[in-house]
Picture 1 (cartoon, rainbow, N blue to C red):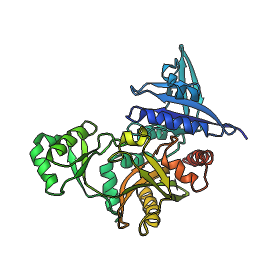
Picture 2 (picture 1 turned 60 degrees about the vertical axis):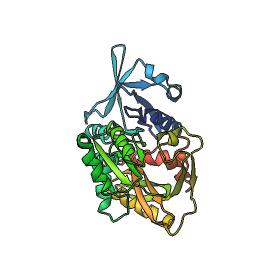
Picture 3 (picture 1 turned 90 degrees about the horizontal axis):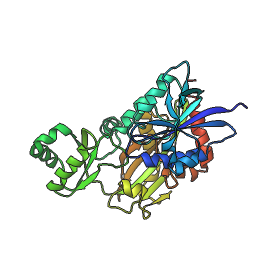
Picture 4 (picture 1 turned 180 degrees about the vertical axis):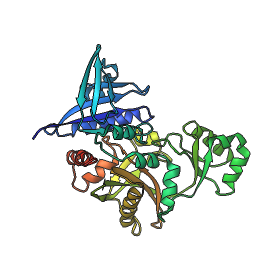
Length: 353
């Protein structure tokens, strides 16, 4: 069997740059080298594209010093990556791309748009699903139409903070404290805060506005934080895993609790009240389908003490780190990481067929 060439893109310009590198290293380790020749392309936080020569360079962070610049041509005839070193140019035809990029400029439809222009098959959701799912406000608008319970919310635009008293009064007329404030279009809980009073609400709105011009203020949901993995889309049946639970060390599951607090733990197949364990996979698959998902997503929920399930958010390129829930959930269903990565690449290859 002739090998295909797979490019793994990692890093990126978002706040989740380091996590992307961690995820990419785990993905690369699990790609079947008998089926794929690998091309590794890193994007620095400044937006410079370079070629990495090995996964070790990703792990020790030396890839940033690479003398070889990289780009993917949007030329749909060539379908290639271009590498330039010491004035010499090399074009490498790509069969499939795995964009292991979290957050803005990677999980939001931008890289996906480039790959669509180039007609290079790729792993994961397309332009629409990526953009909509990255934007919490528009995800909520879509989920509103499904009849799935989610946290009530008030949208706020950055420019409305110029009249802070009016904006805060509008929020206070809808919710009692505490409330959560979130940027609409930022990944991994960056800029998210909890407000117990007006002063904290004002501070939280200002902080969220540093990350996006669209903000959300949500009612406080008291419940257990759980996640469900989804695979499929297109001609492939949409499958949802079982449920995983987050045991967060922090007051809420913020960026540091996710990636840097050793006290945060994840559990697969927790015991949940009522029929929550059956509801969640059905809701996850329905949301994935509604946003036109393809390939993979992780869908997050809260479960209240009475068993009520409340949708939180959908992530179209979930983490693949050693502690990430997406691969753990499939592993609990008998699909190991090597098989999962192979399934994702194979599904990506079907994109334009």
